[in-house]
Every structure is written in C-alpha cells, then in structure tokens.
Image (tube, rainbow, N blue to C red):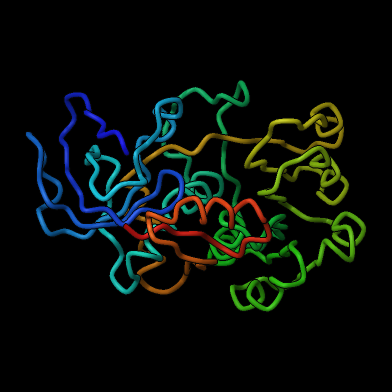
Length: 287
C-alpha cells in the first residue's frame, strides 16, 4: 500500500508511473491539478520526487499513480524508454549538481560553505565507484566537459567504463587507486566509507575532492594543509536541471546503464539484488 501525497499550493500532476527504486520515476501525465500549466495530459515525463524534503515520510515513487509538483518534472528525453528514464533522475541530478551547476542557494547540510563545481576541460578527473549509479554517469558527464577520466571500479566494469569514455581504468580489487593515480585535478568519490581521505595523496595542490556521501570523512585539516578543497552537497529535485541534463540522454552523449529490472510486485527481490552489491548502473521497478 502506498501513500498519495497531497502537495501544498503548487500546481499538481497525476502520473501513470513507471517507477525506479528510491525517488525516481518516469511515466505519463494522466490528470492535471489546479494551476498546472507546464505540461499536458499525455506528456511523457520523468522526475526525482520531493527530495530531500520528504525523507522521513517517503516519496511514493513505488506506485502506479503519484501526485507531483510540476517544478520537479521534465519531459522524458526522446530516444530513451521509460526504463532508462526512470533510472536517471537522482543519479543524473547528483552528477549535474556536483559537476556542472548546483542550481540553488539552500543551506548545505554537510558544510558551512556553498558547493561550487570546478572547470573540467583539460583536467584529470578520477571517479571512484565508477560502475555504480552515480559513478557511471559522472564518467560520461566529465568526459563531455572535456576531462580526462580515470575510472575506479571492480574488473567486471572495465569494458563498459572504457566504452563510456574513461581513458584509464583501475581495478580496485587488484590495485589501490592511490598507489597508481597521481596529479589528479579532481576526485569524485561515489562510494564513501572510512578510507575517503586516502585520495588526498593523488590530488594536485589546488585540486578538489568531491564526496557524494561525506559522512565519516576525517581529513579536513590534512586537505587544508595540502591546498585541496573538500566539498559535498545534497542533491535536490529540480525539473529545469533535469530538462537540461536530459538533452545529453536525448542525443546519446550520456546513457543510463540498467543493471536489472523487476515488476513493482517484486520490489523485495529488487532490494535483495541491491543488497548483494556489485551493481552495474541502475535497478528499475516497472509498474
């Protein structure tokens, strides 16, 4: 059973939903609420639902129908199906807000200063956790912006990540990334864990370490001594950014890799798949 959330005074849409795990969805608009004007019944759209403001009560993406603020919606990119579109929003917005444009001035829950993306053209970017949901999109977006990309993941992901644009690959099960990578301008760590500060040794003075999940990082003083910026932010729903980033899906510059799909009634199986780890891309539920 799923809750149907009632929004505030924002225009509302009711969608027939093809939902992915978490907060993401892709589907068709089947009804309009009062004041809705940006989309029409029959439009195919995708979104990240009410994130992070409904973290405690849930976001209702596991549903056939859902009400959603039109400011969180974007037209589904043509050329990708609903499964790929449903796998995109949270991960794509995370990469966009970390690497391209933060897109808001809300207080940062992780640090006292505003997260600022850095120029990527001509720079070397190392992506840790490159085979996962955020990582494989970070590889592609950094490549699109003109960076040389080093991908760090397990060996099973090597062929895929090289195909997605990585110029170098490190199999972390065989070699520690910090033992071989040197003079990197930016590390984006999409894995987290107790060893995040190990990447400080591979970053140039004046470079940056971006942490998708900064909890547990304990190297701020060391980073300051080395002249390295450590920064994070919390992804937020943003339909306009999703529309902009969606152009990369539409023209094939970026593609969403799907690890596996499950029917909505098999959500527990999908969670079991996620718990086993070694996910390549995204897991998607189909309603």
